Image 1 (spheres, rainbow, N blue to C red):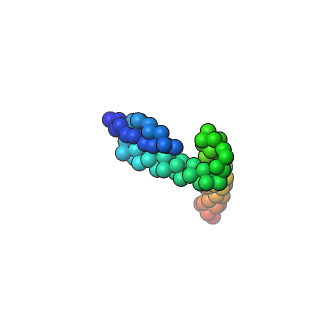
Image 2 (tube, rainbow, N blue to C red; image 1 turned 60 degrees about the vertical axis):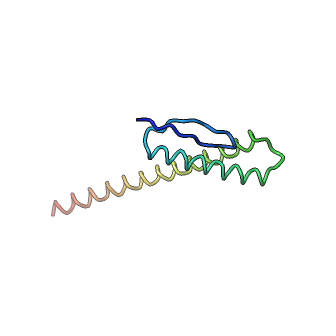
Image 3 (cartoon, one colour; image 1 turned 90 degrees about the horizontal axis):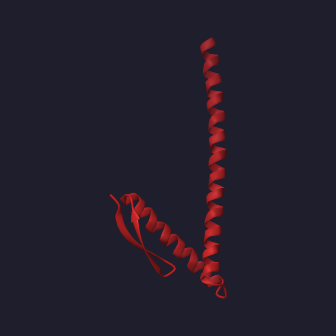
Length: 96
């Protein structure tokens, strides 16, 4: 059951639907994060337009997401390598 919520980003209200309380919480946290980053860019770049500042927020968040994805891929690779080494070790023990 979808829950109707209202969030505010850059002074604009958005009426959305959240599919669960967890999604609602994440949407509210995301909106707060966007507004905080936007306020920081607003203080730093007063001469830029709102669209420019929102683009900076999107770029910054996307860079962070891509960085985390790369870290996750590296960790998954390391996990797979350790799993393979463990399997070889256990197979070697069984042979003895």
